[in-house]
Image (cartoon, one colour):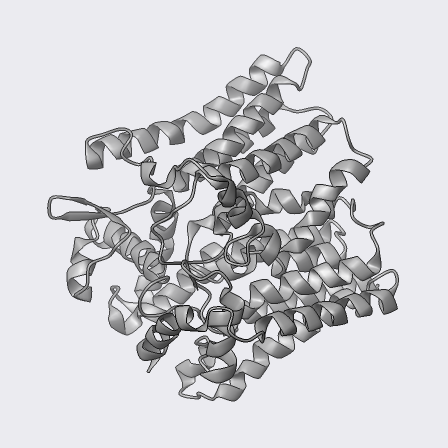
Length: 473
């Protein structure tokens, strides 16, 4: 009963936070949100992916775009624009054509339906599958999926589809060709949204080669039949719009790493996945403790996890000024969590579970209280950027209550209380609650001491803090 009621409480908290918080800002970071909305509006209003009209209305040039003469196109494949278009058309009936007056309302609807709802729906499915409250809490709140799900971006949408494709194929002893076709459709559309989906496309294809039996050829054929039309559509789009079939490949993001890059992308306080979500280390440890080792499902899952870690050091955007940390891993994060969903961390110490969960929850949620995009040049953004914004400048994230003309810095108590309720909901299901509570307390103390350590990079962060304050003044 505790697991069920706690899981339901976690889902309700996520739903309410996704409605309450509205992290849309002026300036860097939110530009991708504006580009995605402009592209959807342009496709509906003008039947083109060209967003130059919105750039002129804005009076300021977009940065992350491709330019062909006077035309301006998003610097991303078109899949997310295509899936956004019918939803934009529905909101247009109520709000009218996209402009500055209805920007926040239009953005909110699209973000909620295409970023927050996929996480919520997958969470409901996991809850109905009797995933424990700890794993559900990690999925909803304790990875970079949490801040990304409150931003109008294709990353979370793609992540959920990749995970569903994995479950559709590899959750069954006998892999039916029809399921392979469904997974191919999911992954094909992922590819049309984000080229990093090539990684799961390849890994699942190789996994199908090892399914055995006389239907291997049929499985591969059905899988490709679902995926290849989308790959063809992406190729045609690149040739039709840019005159080059390889134009959609982000060559600038492909870089040879140095030794420091591995630390930076995996463990650093600025961008490291395992710094922002150390609870994911349980998934890595599960390689050595799981009872499912040696199965095809195990091999496919961990092959994708390892290759995603490797890809992250080669595929990165060194020119990004502001970004959600660890977002490079976003599309495979549910795969990282699958060992937790399978109960492979249940035997780990309650103390360590409480400690790592608390660290992950706070490190991922604190940015959402103010400005979720970290300045790329900062090495310790929690300490030097978010701590001054929240505790010294009282610069908090916009919220939906402001629509009704009510604004107060005390509204920060709403998400802060929600985070405490998340900790309570997970604590009450722990095998040893006292030990879990000690882990929570240790996590709170560690994060507090780290955030309030003086002089880590105060001068380096000051211009970014001043810029943020000036844009919200």
